Length: 321
Ligand SMILES: [Zn+2]
Image 1: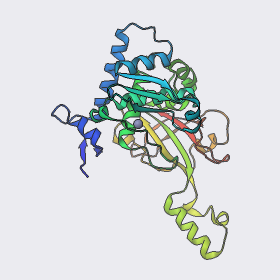
Image 2: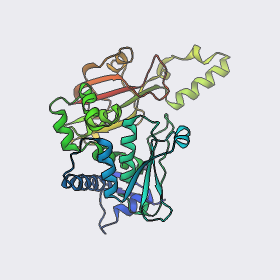
Image 3: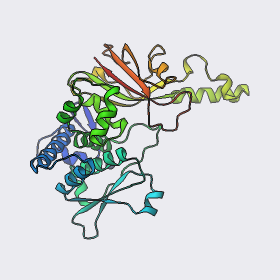
Image 4: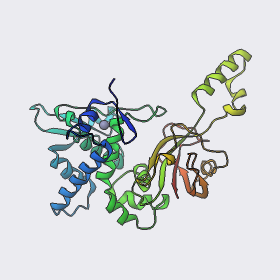
């Protein structure tokens, strides 16, 4: 498999490689998709549309990329768990984004923006690439899906508009207002609080679990000792903790600010308290990364749960230096 490294990140997807090489020079795919998204937003702005209704805005953005946005039919929608898909039309010329009206509005909007972003990749112009459905406990979506999410966030919540709407109130308390303005989901808006932040900020989802090797060790011990797994559930280092699932950082963040996949959060973090509270908790602490910089941490139970237990629900966090 061919791998190309640009700006410290590794890429192997053929669609991304073709984008990286499109101009003859190696270009960073993250800046390339953001540039495309901003170019599209600028085209939209030049049309002088009132831009108040997020779905109408998305339909117009899609049309500027030669895409139509249509509802899935009722029967199909009821069975389909995807929010939106990009389909080729029979004549092979223009394409259609089908969205599922049975899904929550904010997720539909984000997924339509995501499908528009797929058209920024040269090879996808020829055919359909179906949205990858990730198992909730799996590692992150593959690299092209992450790039499309990255661009979708810019399409749905343009950075400068987002900063204008949020003002100086960056944080979880401002998410609901911003989500209502942009027609985005609570979760994607919370992540945008980090990625649109002018300083050093991060956000993401934490899931309560053990590392895979600890799970396996406990299963082995349980079968040898003829115990039920519950009886050895909380021994020493194998105890479950809140671990990083998704992670989003502002442009000002460097590699030292990255919290690596599955990294656990310390027992003293406010996130453990947030799991028992129905409100946003705030505190001063460092993220578990090499920067070890103290900042303002905010945490709440995520409104979107991926099948977590009631005692240890998924947590949404926001942190700013
Ligand atoms: Zn996709």
